[in-house]
Length: 370
Ligand code: ATP
Image 1 (cartoon, rainbow, N blue to C red):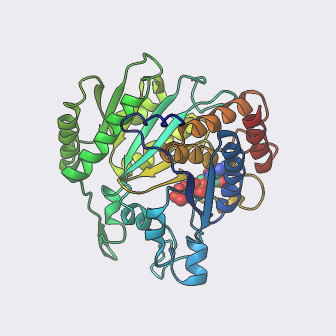
Image 2: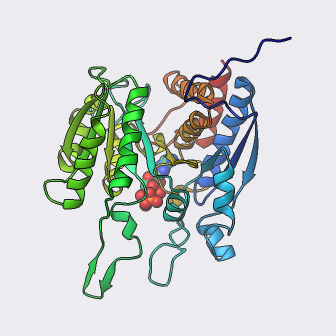
Image 3: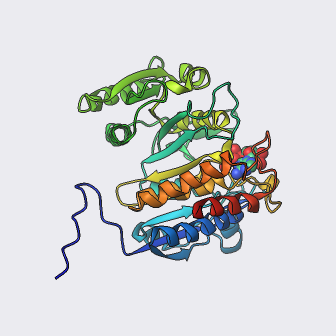
């Protein structure tokens, strides 16, 4: 009789035999980025020894224009049942509601519909990439954990407005804050600390000196932190955080913040690590997850081979980690680093691949196999 397979370490779910993945190609540069990530997936699956099944769901502004809705009727159920979802960016400037706001965006539908309460945005300056600050590779390596289901954006489309005045509300709840802060501390425990000193640290970013909602966020952060005495805590007001993310990014490990602040500060972080095209993200909840680049659909460069697909490829790596295939996620990240440092990928000052989108995909696939 063959020996029983080893039990997975406690808390580590065993990977499914066949990974059930859903793909949303999206709009603008979305389809070309997703195509690139799927080529990388095919290669890494063969190397890592797993199989997967793909289902494509048409969603976003293109779907809104052709089918009258941004997300098919039963899509949320399908996405929840999957082991993970790889989503391209969505949105087309010409697809609008009668009131002028953009139609076909999926942020609210997916984040609220799937209750993916944490948006995890790693910021790493990789070898061969020039960021907007004087820092070098290895000095910027932190994660922004953005609360994803409440905050200022919960008011999306629901604020009060007359032609002369408009108001939106910033909603912070105890339960919503607790779960995202806990996620940030658990993440810090899995990392090896800040680049500068190796200290595991979670930074709470808010404007608690001005707004009550942010004061509640900070109070709940402090309460949750008590259960993590092994992780250092830090508080920063959002304006100081914007300054320090440029001046001393090496001191950060994990940062947690309200939705709107996370949206703004992670774009600032992106500039320090080579631009939006270098940044993937994972939206994660208790029973669903989807990975997507942090940027939009960049219609200005769609279809021209100018987009950097690393944001989508690094999103794929996050999805593989989440789907209990961390060794595959690591392989993808190592391949990206080696393709960048070996010169297989060259990026312009604007963060665009000098030899085109396809050359980046090819360089990552080649680095995977070597
Ligand atoms: P959103 O509000 O949906 O995030 P946005 O209006 O901020 O979108 P993006 O679509 O993110 O705009 O594009 C901002 C700029 O960054 C554009 O000039 C675009 O061409 C560029 N850009 C975005 N993603 C990439 C990428 N992967 N590679 C190269 N350039 C990109």
